[in-house]
Image 1 (cartoon, helix red, strand yellow):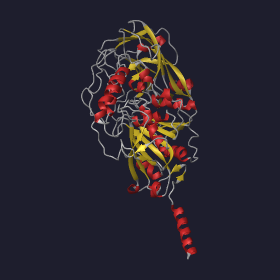
Image 2: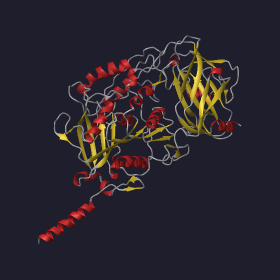
Image 3: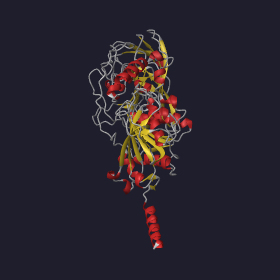
Length: 604
């Protein structure tokens, strides 16, 4: 009888062991497992993770609100799985768009604009649901999904700082908790602890925009366990988001936004503690740091530039961005991608031709996380480093490059030939004695309209001959310019466009604008030092436009437009400032795949 019972036990144990559910991998990707794919079986819980900082002034370490969604097998079968983690300041709602919440941009350069209104956020959402994003994609594939609200938002304690250290240390604390190095609690102020016994401790982070910034913020702490990140359209420097080469410049679509505006927009935390945070962070640190008078790069901005914090970073980086994202511009991803590559980290970049947002194909993300979170050898880190969605590509099937910029791209210098008030020429041969040309700033003209005018006193426009063959640009264009202003301060805006302008309402996003850039001539020495211009005196400065990868089709012209106030992006002083450009000492370098030879073929 005992033998019979023992046999039954062994058979039951063997069957049970065989039936235990595990992640499944095919072609280097985690597959949807039916046993993980029933939302009714998922375990959902929320908790508060203790951090190492106190930014709400209550004398206790701030705790971050965290939500976990995991397959039931992590409870019933002792299955341990890696984590896909997203953090955000937006999960609990944002402030209303009220009149006066943004800075007034209609004033002279260097002047203090009128103050802004501080709308309050009404917190939305119920525990335990912070967000449902990412869950349906990753839980069925054998991942645990974790969400957290940023400091001072939702049910997380503390204060938002918009790029301050606590916004890096908060996700670090969550990752530390997932690895047993930090404490989690069942309630915001209680002492009943929660342990993450159901995870391997390996974490991947992803998200878009601010949610894409926070994976990078966490990675720059060097936290152990954060193995891979996939930032999508991340803001990697608040200076580059709200300034451009010394110029006060708004993100596209948000004229007059600045760090203090964004702070008000996201501050959805405990109402009883908002006054303390507002007075310390918004009204002192941020207000005194942003310097809307000069636009100079200072200690405040340096502390919110993740390029300065990359030394500890060890996570594998898969960057994603749109070349026509004029909110968080494509330079944000490019600068971090290049720095991570120089550090020797595993890197890839996915660029598409659209606007803000746009993650890589799920298959690529799957392989990235499968490699670094499950340890499956799928060779994703090998081969091409860059994937570019060409103009007519399906975003799910981008074109692979060995790297970005295209390794075959070489800088080609184009020189200016008058008359730019009408349509001057861009030439690979440097003409002589072109002299100087003057245009007059007028904020009432949009840049789109200026590019389409046959002539205008409010811009200079120079174009190549009509292209006889397609021309592929890949990388950064750099403008070197010598100019004088009639006033001590002036905006400088530069667009590269494709002509003739396609004004059809069904025009592609790539049809007209190639790339753009802005600069403050007062910062001709450096970003950290500006000085009033001496009217009539010429100054030299050089700066990059935003990265691009685009094929300009035969029949078009590549044109450089130089103007002053850009009424969708810059401060807007009264019209009348005159800018004079020395045409003989101004040129632009553009990155042509195939170099000068291909350029000359296209212009033959």
